[in-house]
Image 1: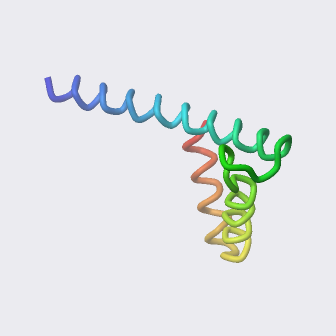
Image 2 (image 1 turned 180 degrees about the vertical axis):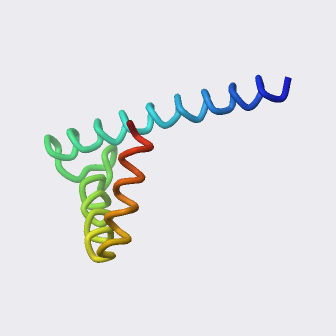
Length: 73
């Protein structure tokens, strides 16, 4: 019973992650097409900030980026 609950929770988290990744992709495309607007926000700026932060962190940033890519696959 506990294993079923944990599996269901894992499925919910995986589904939410897929939805959020799709929304981020939509935000990037909308940001390119429409620029910074009220319904898109600054998605591109936020992504560039994360990439810059990871790049400034050196090897640790590379490790975190690899972990994030692995989680999103």
